[in-house]
Amino acid sequence: MNVADLKIKNLVEYRNEIYNITEIFQNNEKDYFVKIENDIHSFSVPAKAIKPIDITEEWLEKFGFSRTYSSEQRIRYERPETFIKYDIDLSSRKIVEGLKIYGNSIKCKYIHEFQNIFSCLFGKEPAVINYRLLHTES
Image 1: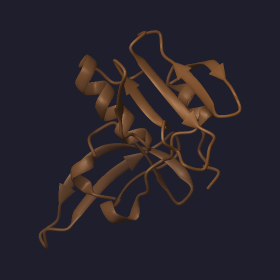
Image 2 (image 1 turned 90 degrees about the vertical axis):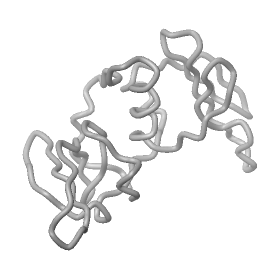
Image 3 (image 1 turned 180 degrees about the vertical axis):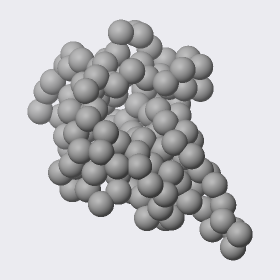
Image 4 (image 1 turned 180 degrees about the horizontal axis):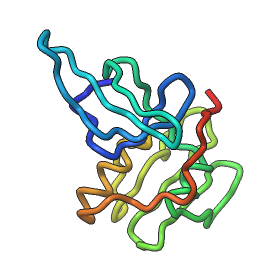
């Protein structure tokens, strides 16, 4: 992962478990490390060892989205803020998939990207409902 895309409180995956980033730092050799923690573990690892978490329907619901539309071509999720939507394109072309803010498409494939966008828009982290899944399905 590119360390420039990360910030404190981002959710990431490490060894099939979900962690919060609590610190980002460089060692004397200028390599980047992140301190990560969950309910069980807390330790530092090289930033390149962590993985992004794909946005899935389950994660959208954990971030307060609700399914509002479903067809053979698309599934739409919306948040209480009426201007934030996420479309899942069921076609192989994936033309309409992604985050929509005020009707504008924004490339957002991973959880940390959504967290960063939300934080920029509202000045706070999005509330996560029961993210304490310690294992991912990858």
